[in-house]
Length: 369
Image 1 (cartoon, rainbow, N blue to C red):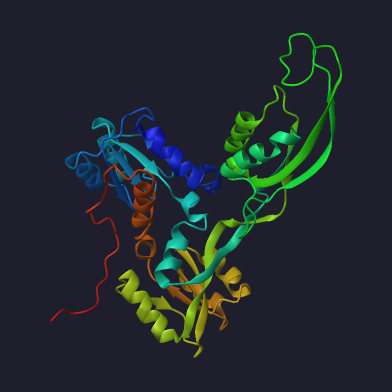
Image 2 (cartoon, helix red, strand yellow):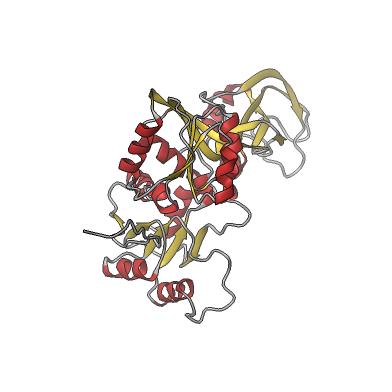
């Protein structure tokens, strides 16, 4: 198995086009054609993680946070990022990062947090718009089912909680094969009429290459008449944050206790309690203050995130409980999320979890006994 086999799986799960403009996801060091000896998964990529990968015979590190983030103008070993990259290159260790692209899918970082809290009926908190495309094509009537099946398998035709959504209308198509053509139907130089179906279905923009490949492989015509059109509809499976519901409402204190137990938080910074039962919760792994108003508008009683600044707590304005559980704490289970994805798709390949402690934040809780 080669590195490109791993990256293809990740691209289908959380396509690089879903990353934010400031981000740097994907393969950061290494060659896609390298054979994979072993995979080590970590939240961060540091010198210790590279050393661990080498010691455990892994030549691919998959991390959430990209070690090359703001860009490296020099690689002289001046800081931890440069030293990590140097170490990886010298020891032929590939580094792959899934950051905001994994944040921006329902089954991603925030979705993992929601599942740990036992939330039901989860949706993307702030779904993206303009990320849907509509495919329209013409196909011989007897091939309409086969082409549809191929497109559905490629990821087209999904709308909300529905799959295999498409539209078919019957008509008559005409064409005249010219010299040099190899027509599936009809004869060279003679106009041909064929009973055809117009087939339409939607698909996420990042799957366009995969959808078109499926269309070409399943369609019998030498030349396929098709069009792709941008849609402004909201695509509710990609976007920032997640919102969902608890099985039963709980008190704010119970929520804090649950957060502390699940995420192992040493301390939780939060706004004042509103003496309300919490049933609907919004979450965003990592820094999510930009979603506070969206969480309020979505009817959440609490918004769980990290990296809230002092003045951002005021944004709650008595309308929602804000809780900052810490950046590492909110994203730590992303490691398990990635490992589960890899083992489900490559069950006979060893995928290892890092033993390195990469959280740079420590908490002092007072004089120890």
